[in-house]
Image (tube, rainbow, N blue to C red; front, side):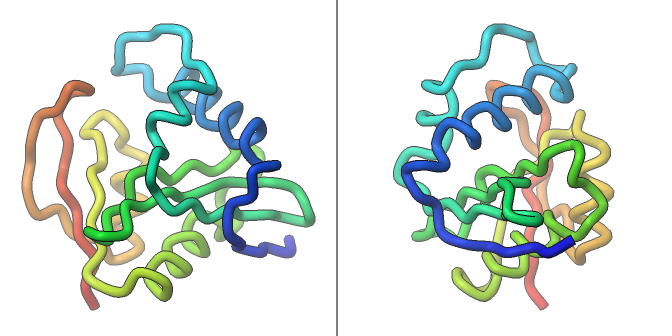
Length: 142
């Protein structure tokens, strides 16, 4: 699989909004379910830098980050493209672009994401509770 990480383009909007909605609705089962729309995606990434992953020429995932704090807000990978290095490639690009340390919040209910981040060298630094429920504040510093 040929993986390429690039900057967001306006033409990516609909595909990324659909990916965002699909994953939230199907996989974030610990959250109260409601209709997720493109507006939710727009709100989630407003003011953030977005990196897009392409695999074999099609959108396979994205990462959004709040640059002033080097805080990764979103990391989503298409279900059909997982375990191919896309999430790791997005994190490495964020590291090279934003520098270290990087931080993110991982919802406690997202056990697969916790395993992924820990395997990539991230450490849970704090626990907290947000509108979405319990989370871990994680950091990466090499």
